Amino acid sequence: MNIFAPCDLPVINGEKVSLRPITREDTGLIVAWRNKPSVYRHFIFRQPFTRELHENWLATKVETGKVIQYIILDKASDKPVGSVYLRDVDPENESAEYGIFIGEEDYLGRGFGTETARLFTRFGLDVLKLHRISLRVLGGNEIARLSYEKAGFITEGLFRDMVKLDGEYRDVIFMAILSEEGKDK
Image: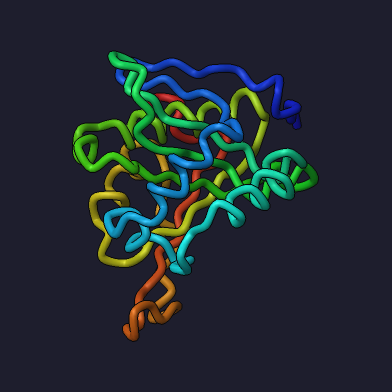
């Protein structure tokens, strides 16, 4: 498995998006985005997101290679619009868990998430040499689920009432893509 040092990660370019490695200077954006209702309502982790939480994440996860995180940019304007990451990177099993959020509401529903999912999973599978990338999506988030399917993820299971969020039980859908899948996406 080919894991880069955080400072050696490449920029990834698509048609609409450009993906660049996260930096400490992105902390303010990440904190603001993660505290937006349009973002956190799709996360299982619902605690208020602070600068300290993010700086700890960078120090213990990103800088150690356990997480590979990028900032999503609108390629036309170079405006940061969200973030994408592979967490729990496991070199032994050649696997990781995918996560994404679009923090700028004007960019929702415009294909930025789907293109990012395609680009970043191919990067994980082809460049980092991962065999499996999985994800979890809350039941009822059909827009995200369909986007992941377009990127080549396959539903593996539905865990009924797995989490209790805002006093309500929610299903969690598990999806994954394997290295030999989705090459034509």
